[in-house]
Image 1 (spheres, rainbow, N blue to C red):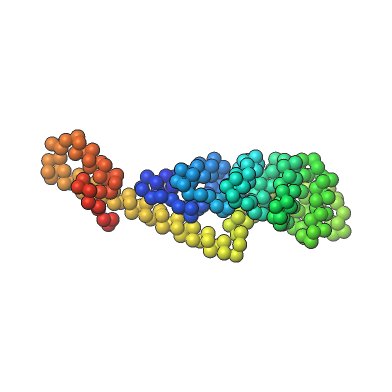
Image 2 (image 1 turned 90 degrees about the horizontal axis):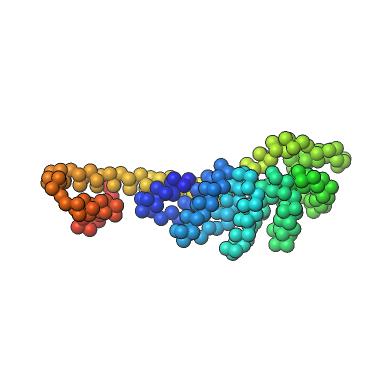
Length: 272
């Protein structure tokens, strides 16, 4: 992703929000936290403001990369930028906390959701309950589980397995940490899909991103081919004119012309 952005910039193209978000989404699915941070820095330098999608992708990267503190800090950064975290943002941060058993932070995030009137879903409660169990707070987890059910949210299979609840609703003991980790891997993939499916038009938007990525890649290749054509053309002309007698200043002029896609007389060269 970074390589593509660097190639675009080197070729004289200014990446827009769509291009940056495509690369952030790719990094999110690979859990590449450092790369998402570098991309956001590139956005700042390019004066391209990140949107909620940009931050959600970054939070998901932190989730998969096991960097729960970074995920929580990103929520704070969103607010500073005037972007309110949504349920996908919070779920990503909660799932990151889940892996480390950071239950106090998870509880604070859930309370914050209620304050901000961000409606939690079953994935929210699953992440928070698992974090509490992992942090040795089983009783709190059971109370939260009951609160969720009282609120009319039906538990999914992963949430039920945390407590190994039978049909009568009696707790028979939690799953092991190894089993929880296996289930967590599935949740990470589901959360990655969540931020891609924030609303019914998200799939179409992702398709548009991929199409844009392909278009940008083709443009980069065209620019490379054009530069090679210009270089060959001038090399041939100089060879025919006795280029060995050219001065150093002429060579510098030619190099600058190639970089700018212009002839030394400053007339634009049309792309092939």
